[in-house]
Amino acid sequence: MVVKMKKNELTEEEKLIENNIDKLKPVSGEKKAKIEKILTGARKSKSISLRISVYDLDKLKEKAEKNGIPYQTLINSILHKYITNQLLEEDEILKALSFGSNADLKYAE
Image (cartoon, rainbow, N blue to C red; front, side, top):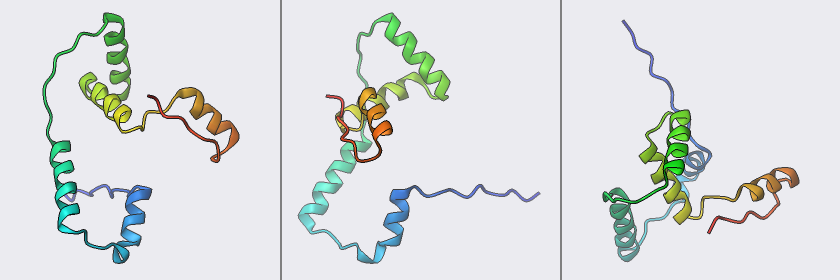
């Protein structure tokens, strides 16, 4: 029996990197050390305990189930998007969609 592997699609960012690989330059030792420190920290995780309202937890679990992921993963994703300024305000997204791609987006703070 031959199993066909599903071909992975590259994201736009990955395509851009592949198309410009010959233009990339090596980084200095100092920059490389800084990047490696960031990557090492990003790979580590720490268990925490927090209090959350029953209502909020139930809603998180509902959304996680709809997305087919564990609720802890959803919480981690939301926190990561917030601290990296990738979590956008809903009204700003709607404004951007209605006015085109030139609209300014405000990140949740």
